[in-house]
Image (cartoon, rainbow, N blue to C red; front, side, top):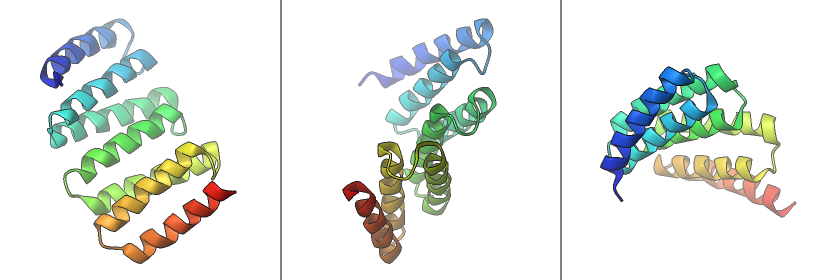
Length: 145
């Protein structure tokens, strides 16, 4: 619950890690993500989005497009965009994340199934219930396999 204090500490930690380890070191990227989470937990979604975008960019550079941390960063960005009511953009990010997870983990992997569920929610938020229901059925079929 002390996210403002955590934000301050994460900023200090991130500055140090950037200097000592570099911007794309996994530990630096972890701190970058933690900072974004602390900002998001305060309801500062626009600032969180900015932090998540930076984190995603650096994670892609440091770990590659298909790394699990990159996919997690993409989900976090989609979540921050979604919380601002920008559902179409959130949908596109969720779709990218889902397709990448299908490639990396396979269709029936728990992480892929979570991404399918996240996309269902974004579709529902847009009132696209038929598409959401079709995707939910596909997901359920994979769960039952």
